[in-house]
Image 1 (cartoon, each protein chain N blue to C red):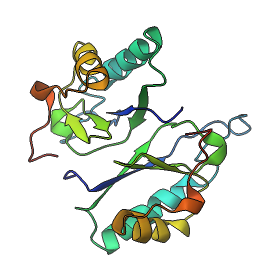
Image 2: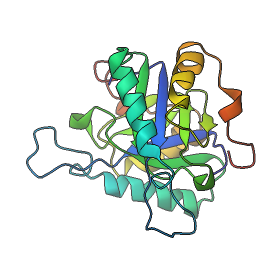
Image 3: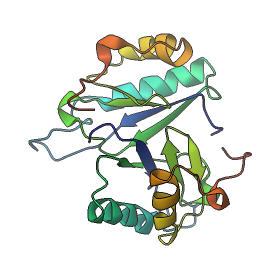
Length: 107
Length: 107
């Protein structure tokens, strides 16, 4: 991809069923990843927004985790329905979505 | 992890043998990922440097690919031997390693 204005990292870590840390896969990250992909494609945002899946970024109890650089803003418990808000308000509009930001003790 | 000063993303994408795009796994990313992990642990750099493995970031022909945020600097053809230079000169010293930066046409 070209160097994007905003780069979205979606944790897609999986762990065995019943693992004490859980995982972003168990909490539904696939829906979030797919929604970012679909919207970037449908709205032709390839040059503005980069999208990459990742291994564990740490705050497993708050998954699905979504990290946005260059700001370094970590969102927690992101749902498919939040993706439009993150894209419109933050990635295109420049204002992070306060209600989804992970608390300071985890990031 | 706590919010790091520098966040290193190492592509660990794999593809089937003979795939025309190759992959960072085929070009040796595991050695690079392990060397970052070992040095971060040995030098106790957990609070300064974040490390995350990723899926494909695009410049497969220049793998192993290593991306550093918040700067958004993409390194290509990174070897285990380059890891010390990246840590000392860029991640701790603040000066990117020019000789390893991917060309503008790929990032």
